[in-house]
Image (cartoon, rainbow, N blue to C red; front, side, top):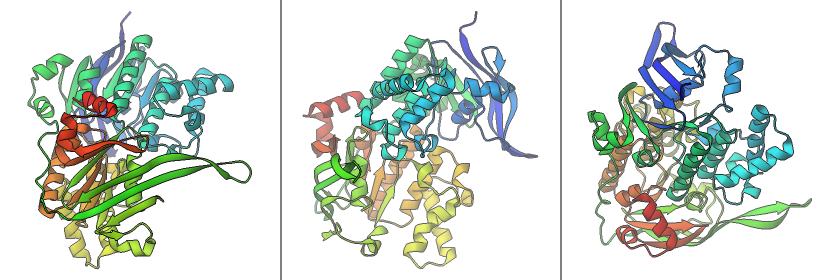
Length: 529
């Protein structure tokens, strides 16, 4: 009996209708054995996710076409088997962790219900037993306060917590094959290490095969047995993990290996003026209960946060998922209520209403973590990028169109694609659209909330260099939220480490990385090296 779990033979996939089909993968072939992990790597748009989604026929019906090849699983060609049979395989025998959990989780149902539902569908499990197992898995994937969080809706969880719920949902039925599409993208390094260890332990326990899609080569080294490298829809190299990293045969593989974040932050002016200051920031969310909805407790998201950010400087905000990093950023932009003092150019903005804040909006921009949720799917890219220009300035349409094209070129996008919609772009391209939307207003301050987490290494390197060039050229000021310490080291002059809503350590980035004093900071530095 063969120990091969799944085999992809010469798979070619195209998108379009009638005679206008654009081929996006070309005769891709590989197999995965029981207990083996195959890492599928390559730049954004190379065809990794298209190949993975083809296994369960999850590509859009009508516009996607399987031009050549077959996919064999348990003696069955998944491309030609019935929809009924596929439904039994999806989520049961083959699990999948998607790249964007906010899009994948049902926003109308609590996460516990969604976990219980998959147990009922695939294993016929009764409610009480399913609830117990769902809670067990919430603990297994490292969610803090699982008894509380199991009753939460997806929007009430942080990006990393939502990703962990997706991991629990994919593994709870103990599948034979796990397709993991960027499963640790939103996770900080400490939780990332826990999840990778968990996946390896479960793989060993279940004899599970795993297709692991990622742009992070440091993860590939830790988890993969074999590596398949894709470029422009083609498989350019497949080999054992050690061979790929030590003796790559293709120039593109070498390029990926050489694209790790490097270099130092841009030089700064010694007499730089203070742009933003935060003093004793406090953000507590009330927990209500009882008939009268009285406040019975608080979620202490951020407590006693203070720092000063000078013009042309970058501060890195690091810490585990749910530590209060993004909440701090949202409070600075007055998108969540807070206590304490926030000043911009020595002007208190804490008590300003919506109208009074409007002049500051063009000066203070944000790039969100999840580009798919941040971009309006009903607006073209030109409309998305140009929206802020129309709100804040009185330019004519020709000027706006010219500024949109220039912003797209700055972030490495083809301006001729500006009339397409966000769903026609890859995850990495959507993130570049989000960056262009912020840059087009030529702001003074940009909150960057995990802006490179969804980008492959080569594009991440380009975007980091772009951010540095723009910072040098326009004296831009960044508050950079990230779980990737190597990226922080490359971009940020000063770093603040957060845990459980409080600062545990802060200092000049190079000093903090070389001589961390707090136990948690030491753990983060060790895991990122």
